[in-house]
Image (cartoon, rainbow, N blue to C red; front, side, top):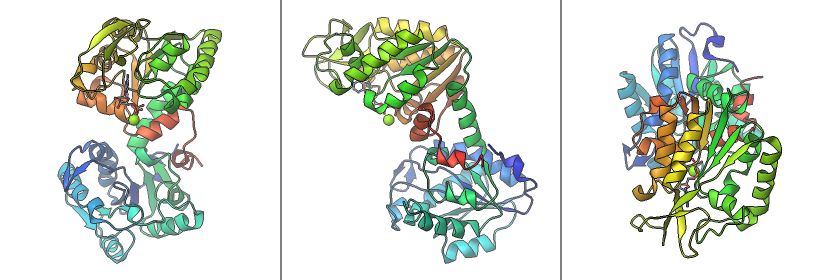
Length: 396
Ligand code: ADP
Ligand code: MG
């Protein structure tokens, strides 16, 4: 994958950067600026190199129509504060205002273009439509830097087509994401443990299939654990169960045995009578779940078991919360896994939107993990072993 350095001397050059500024908004207020912060290393490097920096990004799902609710104007303001430099803002993406502001941009300055998804061609399934938009963007710049990790799994004009029109490279965020995620999908240091949770097995079939052949142990928690417990013949009460996946799970259990991969399932679970934040939690052994209760977290013995397995590993990939961490009563399992990871000295990668949110929400210091992915869908597709269009195009 080409890096920014491969683009040569950037002094006075116009560089178009695709960033991921898809931040949560409450009206005009940005409630979490993590994605803007994640974009800073690349933008600062380009500014230091003396480039004219033009940034394109999307916000929300405006569905190809101009909609002020999804304007990037609040992002321009916050980006300026974080860069400690003024950020210019174009009121359109490739229209008259963008053209005029690109023309007058000076080296060392930043211009943010309005939401690229106001233009229906960005996400069009018709190649020619996307290519036409990409050509209009390409006319603004001498080269392209792809740094929106959250969108690299999308074949879109500002992600994929643009990289075919200009000299293109991966930005620092995309480089770090690929570097970290490829360590857990390639040749990890062993023992290698994969911790999987989240709501459904069916969302994670691709991840299980890909990592089962690479891991030394697979720790299963979260909602998906109940389909595994059911596959072993246990009753799971009213827990989340995907009956139609039991056969698939039996297949994984057999494959694991054949390959010598250890499967670690919860030995106890924290149950509730209903799915509610203030339901009374009662712990049961995993093979003793009452018919009228649902498992909403892994129990204390399982937490200890999972923590000790994690402590024995040199590499850990974690995707999916161990329980309904949004309810404080059922966040213990997710907290225990995060704690074990942050205390261990293994190489640890956390992928998945809710998993990353859980670690932050539970107050863990992000720097104690080797890598927390900024892209939910993109990180899952990498864990599934897929080739992402926005990455492949940087390798050509
Ligand atoms: P990620 O976004 O990290 O890939 P998922 O989207 O697969 O994770 O799963 C996250 C969701 O799984 C959370 O909202 C959490 O509440 C839910 N979840 C975890 N354990 C359970 C459970 N035992 N029962 C129901 N939902 C669960
Ligand atoms: Mg999710």
